[in-house]
Length: 115
Image (tube, rainbow, N blue to C red; front, side, top):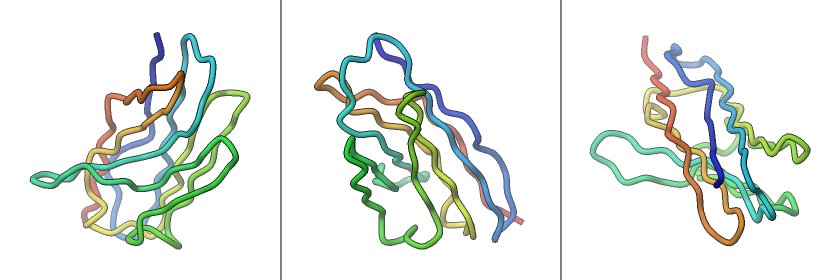
């Protein structure tokens, strides 16, 4: 069994920063990739950023230059540094782990950008 636990969400003013963390635990034999998705009210879940085992990185166009994804392989943890946050970044952010030949999701953490 694999668990993903996210932390770091909250309320921030426009232009502010937040750092999300996602720690994977359990019987992890292989990790192909880890990433972050988000879902705003009334919208579909969308990719924010993804990092592969070989550190290939993909970002959504809407966050390029503002968000940075990184990982600590020794801790099975992925981070999302979010800078210059905008109200349209408001969403529930979910961690995805592609592990043991299947996908695992975290429970989600709320990010609200508002003045």
